[in-house]
Length: 187
Image (cartoon, rainbow, N blue to C red; front, side):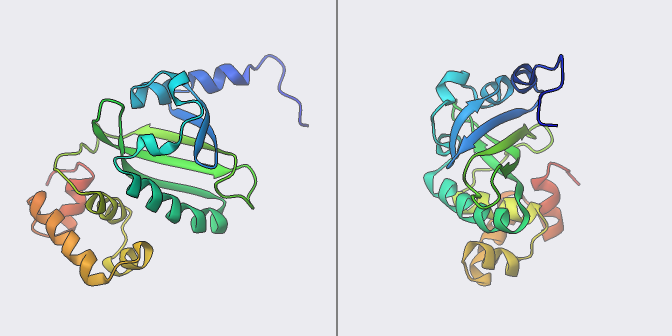
């Protein structure tokens, strides 16, 4: 049965959902709900027709995230991660992002994405470079330096250098303590 359920207004559900939601195509926002606009500090009309790149701290992070999404979407049909995003005010914050393409053969084609602000549980507490933000997000996912190196096309030694800088910035004595601090769990 492809017809809408009687009495259910799906447009209102989309607009009033308690998490940020959008429909996109080729990483351009086609429609955003109220929660997404509020989370990023924009009006809905300011987001329509705009590239997701405006929600990233740097263009490089936008590009690298897109490069990571494609193979995962091709393999699983959906993508999910936690990353540092950029509000319209310039504030950085941790965000849980999940999405899937409506056509599994077009991973960046038309898709539905949700965004959840997790900054209360995981505040951004240190000045991080774009690469450190990327490495931090992958560490939070539980990936090893070797896996991270492969995923982001760096040597394991370079990833270890970034991890060491993160440990210093977060005053973490061990890798485990670093991950706890990155997720906002203070030991």
